[in-house]
Length: 170
Image 1 (cartoon, helix red, strand yellow):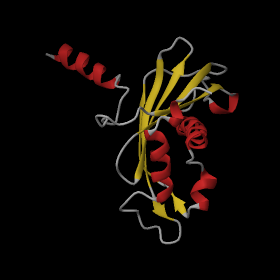
Image 2: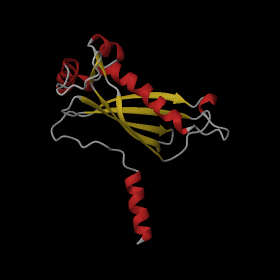
Image 3: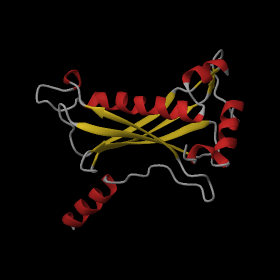
């Protein structure tokens, strides 16, 4: 019984999809950033400190936002903010000093006034060092009140997303 529980939890721990996919919804919008572990990102054992992982995710989020029209300048112009309301990280394998890896951010379609993003840190051997998810809620920049319906900026992005614009090859 204990061995079965361990095997079951290992399968769950390896889960790469955090958000349910809506049938018929467009594929996730994906952006990747190639990185190398720097000295100042590691601990005394030359392993990346766990608190660095959200910074890696943010780098890929910025690229993703620029790709699809949800960059910080666009938020500011629209009078929006998108604070993080939830962040979860699963750690599988360590990253080491000078190791090259890829950060993948995937924006997942949803019908709410929020952003659901999944992340992976991928080692050179294609194994997953870490996976994570983040939820951001759209709020009004002046009042801080959450939007109950999608803001116009998000609706415009969804319109382009639905037509496949973010998946076309240049």
